[in-house]
View (spheres, one colour):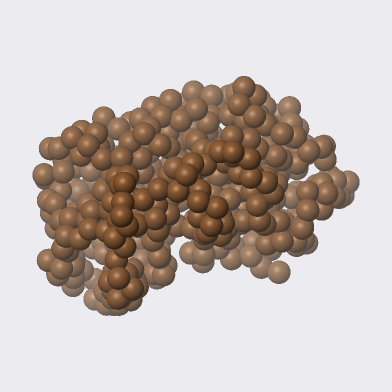
Length: 425
């Protein structure tokens, strides 16, 4: 069997594929791999752009390791293969919700946590920051629980699958809540001069800059007492399906065939941006539909360096005359205490660059990466980058501690792969 990721830029051929339905099944697979000298990895839904999930040994597909194991007050324990979209629905049915989340919900719980998936938030961090406990199978076949106060907890929340196979996650949850979503058009120049104000005034800030224009679509989400005022079914379809996917995909296809038209296409898109508002269930506001396939690179920089990062990225695109269809997305998070979280120890801003999948542009990513690394940027573990352990050890204060813990827990590198050999050494 050949495994291919969502973006179709990573593939691998494991020796064997298993579908564990229980923790003992995972234990059995890990012990079997160790006995015959094979490596083992659990793969999610393939939404990473890097080779983080690939293996040449035993690949575990967790489609049967799904569902809620238990509810307890403000804690919910969910099996690792559960897709985030399913978790949202199960929580909502019980009147519960996660405090924050990213905009894609196809990933498994384990895959999203292990690669540091995040949304945007002034006060609430990424998924790893909402974890209360982890259960994982270690290289010796034992089942370990990690809770606050343990080094394993702070290391394994964003663990890249390098410390063990995650089998269950306990999240802190809260009563379901509504979000007031506001979309408006703003000039990039205006945003750059008011970043601190925008960030402090909104619980969740997310904006998209259209290259070759000064236009941004700014999305702010803030808690609302109600009543709900969701968009109509027609409005939801118009925004989420027709405009953001069907027509955008058509524009990308035209730009791929006629790159000279891309600046004009973006100008037309900018002119079409309008204001809108809605009040709806939190996870419906947080999440989005993404049908147009792309490649992505995302860096986290210290929040105070965001304006410089954006100005230099804009100037680079203009100077190199690259034709970029996809908007550049910007989000923010508070500091995290997970050792390999991209927000570890500092308030962070994220700059995400995308390219239409059929027309990759490595020079664009390389140029932006040079800017981000000069600003002490940390690459998202699941998105394209060229950093190795020598660089990453300088921007992660607990990097050496993570590697030392890995040496102790997996000295034979049962959970290793080519990607981990590069980023962890």
